[in-house]
Image 1 (cartoon, rainbow, N blue to C red):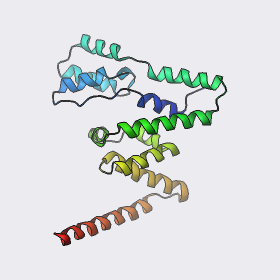
Image 2 (image 1 turned 90 degrees about the horizontal axis):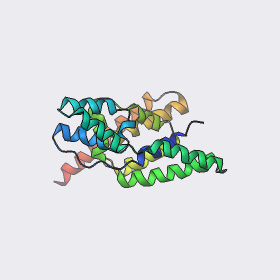
Image 3 (image 1 turned 30 degrees about the horizontal axis):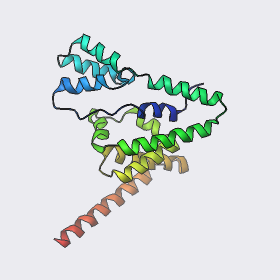
Image 4 (image 1 turned 180 degrees about the horizontal axis):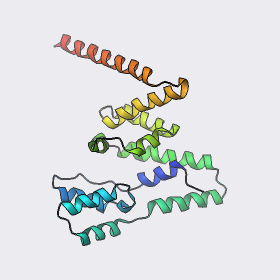
Length: 198
């Protein structure tokens, strides 16, 4: 059986954190290729292309990708299967994984690093997949409270409102427009209050 989305997310979150990237393109691309399980990432082809186009050597790329392979996703799948074979209920496994995810993501989340995914000009597909899950919506909502400056979380929060409206009454645009009007009015009031106190 296919692993649950929670298991897949746990495998992704369990990866080690990348350090800050410097301005040199090859160093940034090199760091991406050296990340644990970078070979398993859907963007590996683009990262490899960037590395090679910035003058990186193919042999170095191969070495980075092979040295970084950890097998987190297959290990997580094996663990999942062993737990199921031992009689642990799927719902219990899901909750354990989501609790682990909430703790790890909450501790490691960086608005600046998260917003990098927006640099490509489009929202990655995994964001929409995450927002289809009730646990994903809860996670994003909690992160948005902690990190209100994250543009990715602002987008995801708006998308959650749209999805909930669509699920409840079949129309998300009208509710989103009302919320956007409310947000603009609130911002104007806050600005007016700040100007009045100066």
